[in-house]
Length: 153
Image 1 (cartoon, rainbow, N blue to C red):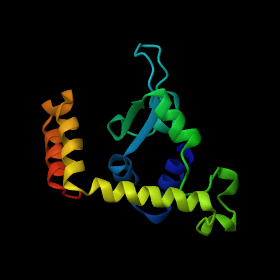
Image 2: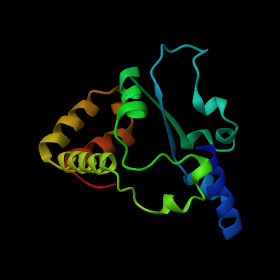
Image 3: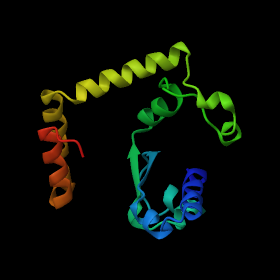
Image 4: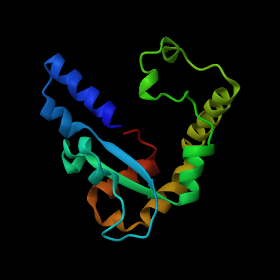
């Protein structure tokens, strides 16, 4: 993620775009495996130099149960090929993947997207959100309302 943020900021600089404005408009969400909360727990946004170059307000951490993290990172079929920095200049990376597992992942992503567009699913999701303590914040209440009504942000 640090390489991507660095590349984006370098590109804005070369393009003559206001880099500070881009830093403030960016949003970075880090998903980590949930651990017991303590002052000593590892927090990605505090341990990466690149994150220190961005305002704290643009960085968010979401912790998920370890089983979900393992599934998402290690077992879930992906819609794209693995793209480590060493392959960024590889011409093959410009082409869409054609392997069966990628097609299966795309089909599942489409099914989930279509399901999320149904009124029933939006009601279930927005009811779950409404039970969160974040409902005390106006921005969160607006988000829940938008989800319930099916408005795209």
